[in-house]
Length: 296
Image (cartoon, rainbow, N blue to C red):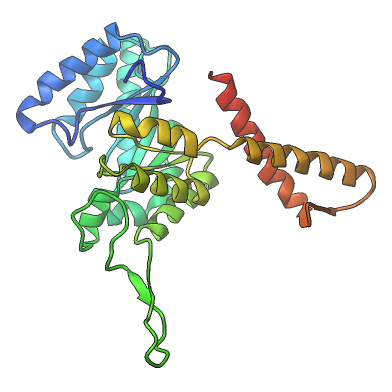
């Protein structure tokens, strides 16, 4: 993972670790933080849930023993602003005790009905907040959705076209996670955070993963979890603006700059209307491309 093309490396102490192996996993993470060269990557640790007796030891030991390399705590099962306050207070106390120079940021996983209901207050709860993540599997369990998959569509969630005599009726699949993802995007963007889509469990289906990346990107997500090395390149490709998108964005900025000089508020470009709102869209694409290029 440290040598991969992933932007962020997340070491997990929560769901992927058996309850009897929590202490060993924590020691392994601390060892990695001290010894592994992660280069310029953002390094995160998913700690145990806030109501787990493992959580406080995760925070204390990583800060006290792991040096300065941990950039972000990924916090699961966040239900309300008080959860974030508690994590912030504990993190601040330990950082102050050891004299840590770099403040640890928070990535908050929205993966239950309580968290989704309170997502606005969660997003605004701490200056440490950097990102909101959609935890689709636990969210599905929390809403009692009829699925055992980790992300992806459900063949039973769709609409049937109206009956028209004896003609065959088409069935169109829907996206059962559209509302949840859109809700997270809105809360994140309103508070200056990055919205991140969670995992797609079928690692043998790269086309399915790509489709999930594309729909997340269109909705405004900044990235998606990759739980297998084969998913990294796909995510990087989909969430990076294409050369065609960057070229059009730059042409929009040029066209609107010219329009402003001529006293116009809107112009036609390639037969399509562009106006002041188009500038914001184009600037976002150009800035994202510049940030990506700067990391290469």
